[in-house]
Image: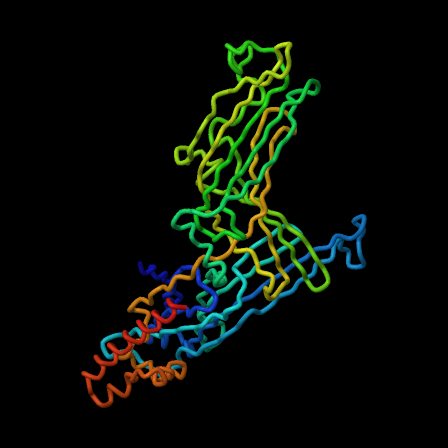
Length: 444
């Protein structure tokens, strides 16, 4: 399915660009339509497009004991901006290219090859720390005359790194997991009040045994919650309820919405020799803790078990609840060990919280998690975004002269010789060329 193009307009300039996530190393394409008649009335002389990737970092260090420095500040703020890439391309100059005789619109196609080793798009902002990794394009229509601002269209887009061969082998989650599993367990002693004996609660999370997990993929898991009451005398025939008919503490959660599932992110930001940290929590939708998806989670409840502990009739009630589901994590992949630049680093922890009545009785299970990109998908270039072989702008723009090197005859040569049949043949060659490029990229 070809993604829909998103259109933005400022005066005579219109940008057509797909609003999709890009893969580092892929070629991004789009089109800028220029209304030449309006551009003349608007005194627009030049049309440029800029491709830019930046990393911005801020670390704030509070002064000891909040004393004021000589500038009257109680903190020192350190900034750093790192330019990941910058490319400016000339699309049009007044008098160099004109639209077709029956139109006022001059289409200007563009393409740009993203560098291969780019970090993922990222955003973290706290009162004293900030780190952003952003990518975007900007179309600038330069105007002449006093008090005339340039025409500008800005568009941000997301970028994720390409998956490594070892990571591609772990993308089998899309077809169900048939490999090994690993368990993470946590046990806590609970007490309903200030005095008395302790009860016990245990949680076990079972997930696929993988070094890292692909983003956006459904990760299957099972959560097992088991509780033991404190030692007590009890009539077994009554079941694990008190004299008022309420479940005896601690009762395991009955519904998946009673359990909280959170993704915790810890970010380290470095500005030269200064380091800051920021922490964020993201609620994961579609699984545990989501009241709208209870029906999609499999619930299994064990029969309560009375376990005698001594000859005096004392014992404990053991109850267990099991949840089987899957969760997708739509956040930036974890940076690799060879990342560049290394000013920003972040790590994830999957946090499960099983609440129980009483202060400090919540059972918290933490699982470190590494995320990696999915297999890059080749996105076909829409027909209206391909470099057309019959646009007069093709040869008149130096940026498009590469079409000769690719074996595609330019439109001006064809129009001057009047060979319409060659124009049709050029379009067929162009389509075959795009198909061959797509096939080669797919094999990679």
